[in-house]
Length: 434
Image (cartoon, rainbow, N blue to C red):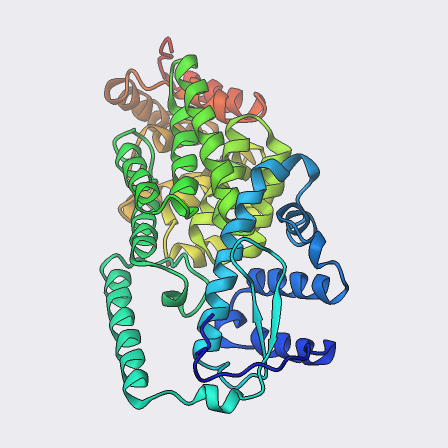
């Protein structure tokens, strides 16, 4: 407990319900809790249960079901989340009573080893709020040094996307977690484009390093799940695919366990579900992630791919303006390629050609996927010579690229793949034996 036991005095009587409710209101409105709806819900639940006379019934499983909405089947996997959150609530309460809550007449605490809160009535709060000048100086100096160190870590590994939503982060996050967060930000930047495996393996190594730095934080698991699912989609051998998907399932489950309401964790699980052929589940989870973080380009990238490969072409095209705005802060190549592909499959061949050529002119990679769609779009648009030229270049440059295998594995139905492959063959593409 953050309160000073030598300067505070406690009343022998119990705090009233009204006093406890007022104390809870003050805590929830504090800087420590204001930015974390998850921690607010946790503390509100246990306090209300205690006030209702059900303190002895508060267990990890009741919190998992009543606060987080888990099903009974998920409880064995989710109770660890409750333990982690209980620790965060304790730290936030300590921080609050060390700083802004020194004058509160009622102290709410969450004893270690229990989820039932305790309430201490303090009658000499003012006296408890007065600290020796030297102690106050040391507290301020320590806070400054911690903030400086944490600020260095964030600055050193900064990128366009921040993972932490709670403020201020130094109250909850140790340097190891900040390092993991920065590693994850760097790993996100390496996932796309994925024409070859050379970018994915370094990204996976970064995410696995983030897990090693902080095994209780979700981001390394989420990133690893996305990369391993992507690797599974690109693998030519079935045994390797199954191994990678099992690993991705485990990683995505860990991400959800530690951060069940984080958009990236949901997006990672959605991508795994897509890679496993559970398309409806993937669409639901990805849509929820986008709804929670509509301005996060990384979440939108994977959502765009899921929409494309489940043939939601109209939905993709309807979001083209939004994608253009998101592309300013990352994800431009993914959005452009997804839009160009959706235009082709919607019969808008001239628009598809323009989208791919504009992307390439802006510095986007010209790889086998974009070449395939350009070839097929030119053929469908009646520009046969250009289509034949691209076919010859494709046969010479990427003779062993398993395009048809990858596309058939990615698309949920065969029709879009057959449309693309038929046009490529007509243009002169020589099908390789995958």
